[in-house]
Length: 125
Image (cartoon, rainbow, N blue to C red; front, side, top):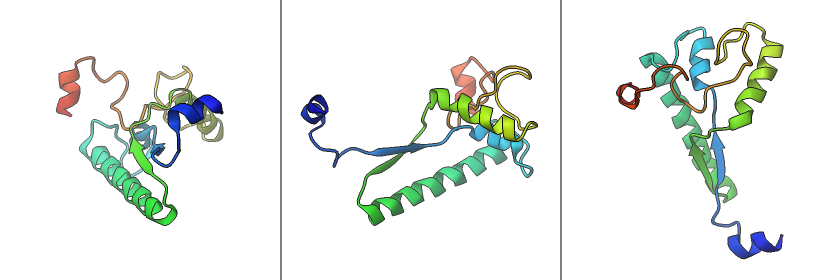
């Protein structure tokens, strides 16, 4: 694509971004946790997952010579799409939102959507 070639030049310095969604719901659904992101155990498990992902991406960079980065991706419509597919396969799965609403997953490793509107409360978690 001519315009892409003009402003990107080369793909050698661009990253392949990897992210996750729904860590809050992972905590709610995991038998050994059964707690959302406000719980220290779920936070610690999330750190372990993120560290594992970061280490794997580092290995992939060395193995393939490509650049990867781990980000808190918003994933927008993907949070709905994956939750919808999971709900179809596992009807009892916990997702974000209220019962009867369209299922979705919380972005990245965010706190529950309705946890607080006070940013300072969220930062204290």
